[in-house]
Amino acid sequence: MLKKSLAMVLFAVMLVLSFESGVFAADNTETEKDIVDVAKEAGSFNTLIAALEKADLVDTLKGKGPFTVFAPTDEAFETLLKELDITAEELLARDDLKKILLYHVVSDKMMSGDLKDGLKLKTLADEKVKIALDPVMVNKANVIKADIEASNGVIHVIDKVLLP
Image (tube, rainbow, N blue to C red; front, side, top):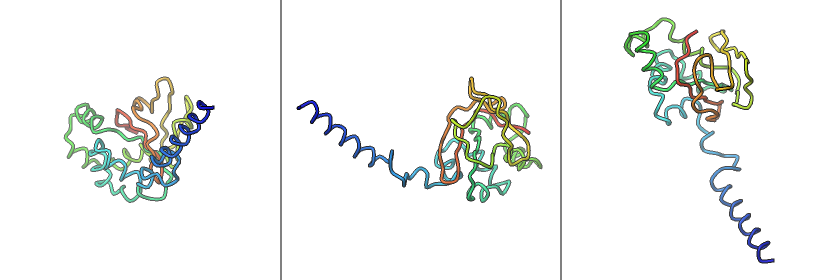
């Protein structure tokens, strides 16, 4: 009887803690922020945010959505700059910057569980990216963190900049 009572008390405490921590709460503060705000808060997407601002895409990704964004890290942009032998300023001045950025966005919320091996997703650049699952990749970029939810979609962090 004591074990049963103790188990019930433990269950009740865990239930209360889960509600307080937002596990079951409908108003999870993380998902009250849109994709742009979540990316800014993360602190590892400064180049991506600067590029979105330069290409006038901030309002788009603050929009209703839903969107799936394959978000390259600052390190991914540094690698691209070295590969292209250009500066960040030169990247931000490219005529095709908007298309490059739109190539990272799908007009639907695709959680990692929705992705299938070989799946091709049409991006807002009107071109497709290909998904692989072992390991999880978008084209040749590795997904290093998946399913970061926002109020208007989801972010999957990738280690390379996708080029259309």
